[in-house]
Image 1 (tube, rainbow, N blue to C red):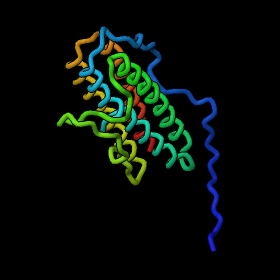
Image 2: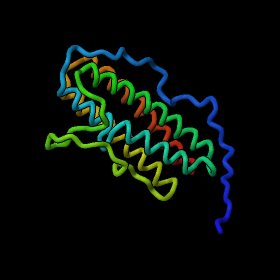
Image 3: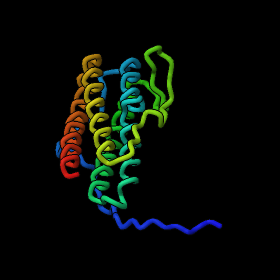
Length: 181
């Protein structure tokens, strides 16, 4: 016979907003169609280091923490919401550049690889979760900077620069959460 179980979660996410730098995003536009640029942005969209991976990892961590540490869970969900906005902007840029938003990114060999949850870090404790999130944000910044060096479209680069500001802010907040443990 199965024992009935329930979860006591009083953490309310009502009214929660994306956690991001209080600066506007530049317009989402491109200088012209460029499928090579679209392919680079698809890596940022759904590669191993990507907005899709960040969103999924933050949601997983938030779910695991919401019963025991509601304030931290709310922060992680607010960060995930900002990452969702990044995902949307990247998707719009990809389409404008002539690419497809299909949850695949080109591997180094050139073949498309579908996004997979294997890209996620799912540590067993809060400190390791936060460290994995900080590492993922830092990796995203490095990748955006690398892609900006390869993309010769000031409109695309302006959006990526603005996204980097949010990622740097997220690292700062995650480090503060680490200090509070």
